[in-house]
Image (tube, rainbow, N blue to C red; front, side, top):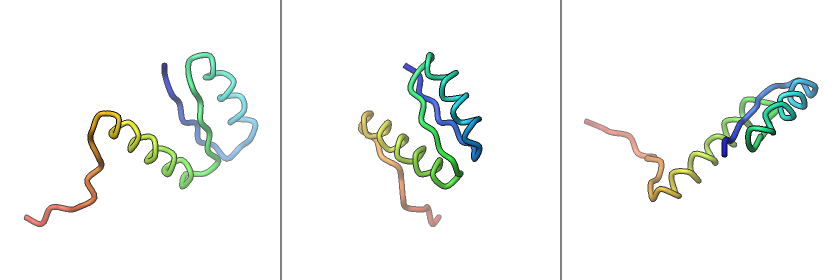
Length: 62
């Protein structure tokens, strides 16, 4: 199943895209970029955890 994240600050656009894409999979919507990035990061963490991986939070200092 596909999963979509639609980002737009116009309610009508969000509603139309949610309706259009819902027949192809799960649709999440966000009205601002910050919220979208938080949702994306959370989904990425969940996907990686399901594979037994995690997001590296340390930086290389070579």
